[in-house]
Length: 530
Image 1: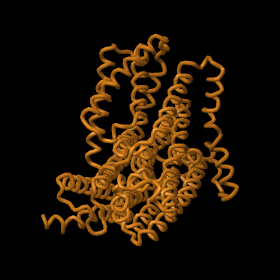
Image 2: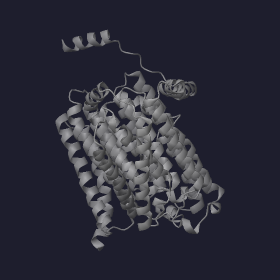
Image 3: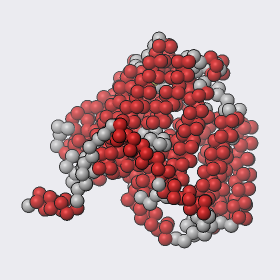
Image 4: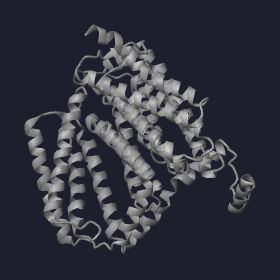
């Protein structure tokens, strides 16, 4: 319909404009009215995003509308960002009661998600980069919500520097792409690489190869991959809603960048190798370190680093539909996990009180065989119904088999007690959900025509096996000397962040606030109450 095409640019612009106006108004309104304004603007953004996705699914929107992109990837990301914004604002209205700087928080949260909306919809390289920069600056202020906390100040300082490095990489890549294509329109640049079957890796020029590698490097930095991960672990000093916004709606923009430019990335072997090595190894190490952490929020932060690494590996393999599914599920789960972290503490304490029994070798073997048979049946069914490249890679099936093996083998422990039939049914449900959702998201995204490299598939499968071995050693083999050594290094985070912190403060010194002693804080509180 012609009227929808005329109206769509204004509907798309309405989302960031509403959030930006809400941010501006919230700084001048009374506290209660500011919260109501924020809830109204985020609800408006959520409703318009859902409407746009519905119109896009019905193919009533053009692919490019004005200066905005309206492909399914952009509309899904827009709906996700505004959903996280609405949930965070609703939660924060109660969580931050009594805080003296609530209006500042309200304005900054809306500003962050207004910039996120611009970034995911933008069809211009300059606008995308400016929005990315605005997101980082606004998030920096949220991370410094408690400026008197030394760890929060240190984390914000490191994130500020690393974010500038990532933006410099993205800027250089964008300049190279602009010089090669003589346009700053993202849709035109991506369209030049759309038919990957008609192209080969050797057809890329040196500038295009450099741009692909720089985009991969920018995503690795933005997604807090090892060794530049320390700031993500330390920002748990910020309020819990800030952590939910960061882990649920901001940090995954590095993955979105690679999903957006995946047609270029999948034609660059060096960029894919960079992601497979750095993100693959980092994901395994972060997952092992996570198992040694006691604090719920710290465990979730390490989990985010591991999950972001896995998502980048999926993109490098060409499994873009799986990466998008992973991004959506991770964002919603992490927002929920942080906002319910108070209940998670009680649940974790109850779980730890229950004694656990390690499965016997026979139980591991039977669980592995049952999982392999179940997954093999799913593989045969999926490949008989479709020849899509989404189901051609073997490494995702390896990961699914190992995960189901752990699920079935540990069913006899008192921590996860349950009948074999119930666990087998759950395992079958997991497999069906995996196949069904992967097929659904493959229909949303354009076919890449990319064939997974056997060597890359083998490398990722080996990483999954290494992760399984590390899990077994840390959970069931702590009596082995090698496991104790591994546990010691994992507990220290492999000493990576200490080295990065020393180097960062040596090159870019930053004065940190002194610690506030509890006695001084108590005296100041009594003085203010008098």
